[in-house]
Length: 264
Image (cartoon, rainbow, N blue to C red):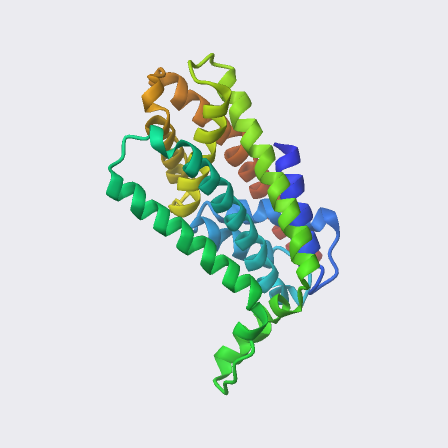
């Protein structure tokens, strides 16, 4: 779990420092603060707001584009990994041919859109306008157009390393319960679980747990595992990777607000 969020904080620092000076500790604190804010708001929205507003800088809004890129990269990595799992293991899922064809098309569409956004990121932000609020938003997002291909590749590599970490973490948790499932199927199933969780983001952290559990039960259904074991594993991973860091983030938010109030 520490390695998971350390990698996410490293990616966030690497991207955010393009807009403002930020230490690794500040990046780590704002990452967990984003998780805490996500309790009250839809996951990605809360995460972005929490990360940006928790930074101690007058120019923190300039990192809004960096937060979007950071989340977007992790989204794309999860879709890519999940697509590989889908291609390898979709035949074992109890879905109709039309449903599988629709999912094929959806994944191709998402991957294509992500690639287009990455390649044409500068052009997408260079449109002319005189509307004040649009100009303000463009200013907050302007950092996106300053990233080089190499910088995005580095961030993508960090995001990929993080994906591998929580993929292995989930598989290790599953092996603790001696499930009658081959290791290759475990990796493929976990990739599909993260794929569904990415495409269908939960409204809150409780919803996130429900999505994980229902997907896991469906993905591994053909192996006839004990439902209680699957539910226990997903709950364990949720406790370690989500609830634990959220509680730490809530403490950091409270500490930051208290210290700011005391300083004023």
